[in-house]
Amino acid sequence: MSFKELLSREQIRTLPLRDAIAIDEHTVARAAIALMRTHSLGCAVIVDQGCRPQGIFNEQSIIRMLIAGVSLDTTPISAFAEPNVGIVRANDPILSAWRAVVDQGHRFLCVTDDEGYLVGLTGQRGLAEYVCDCYAKQIAVQRLGSAPWMLQREGA
Image (cartoon, rainbow, N blue to C red):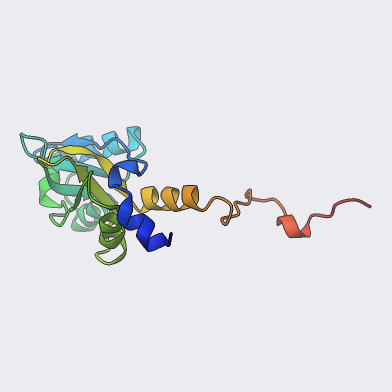
């Protein structure tokens, strides 16, 4: 089976999903940044009252805020959030997530159920982990700072 066929058959729910940080549009930037740091996640998803994704607040949003010189303590994240949030359904084929990342340039993708409720995050990292799992024998992982395996001598 080709890689494209595999991406077309497998569902997004099989990707490694991360728990999303769901926040309100009125949340101030400093509080959102604190949550992102606590969870070691590069984004927070702005959701409506029904927990449906409306936007995304990410590192680029923070950079734009710092450049603009606004207060992180009083400025709501909605003022600098990305409205073009990548959304995929858990039952969609992985190929749709692949296209959203590669063709549309999304780093993070909000994964929703069939009703549009946020269930998790995936994106570049989730796809990379999936590829590594599928092709573990073809992908050689080298420890940082060690000599490449082909330069290590065996025997005398």
